Amino acid sequence: NHEKYLFFVRYMKYLLYKYKLEKKRTLNELNLCYELERLAIQIAPEDFDITISSAEANFLHYRFLESSPPNPETRNLTLSKMKRTEDLLEKAEKMRKEDSNLQRLFVLYSYDKLRSVKGRTILTYDMKKESDALKDAIQRHAQSYLLYLPKSKTPDKETLSAIELSKSF
Image 1 (tube, one colour):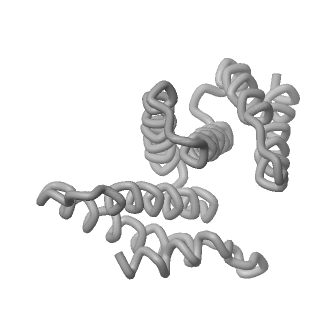
Image 2 (tube, one colour; image 1 turned 60 degrees about the vertical axis):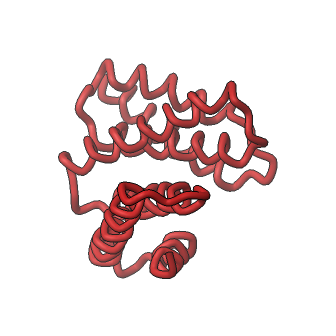
Image 3 (cartoon, helix red, strand yellow; image 1 turned 180 degrees about the vertical axis):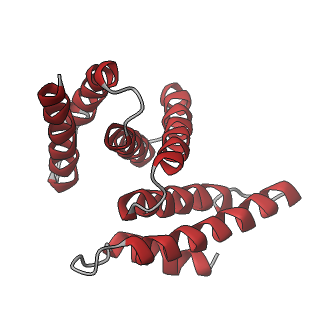
């Protein structure tokens, strides 16, 4: 069982890596990640590596849907992927807060959510409060990201960009 579990974890990470490298993206890799998640959870239900990989798969799926032309049919799926990402990130944070990849995903997730709030035409008082909370979250996770990032690793450019751009909102 342990070898199966390791295979599932490594294969999920490979699929996520492959998805991010591809120019023409499809959901094949992400859908396979969901299947691997389902199988791995049967072996290790409360595992950090599966949780963080699942969070990343849901986040990438959300971004894929957001980059597509607006469609009322996919709106619920988009919201569902965003909510699932948030739930998985919070679950992973309870397991292992000191992970740079987790903090990186939190920054990117919070930045995307901030852009969504700021992109609305009319900003209510509650939206302003949510926007401020998201900016605070980005800064908090950015500090943790840089703190937990191994010295041998170069900081992710997209994450650094999100950190800087969030300051201008």
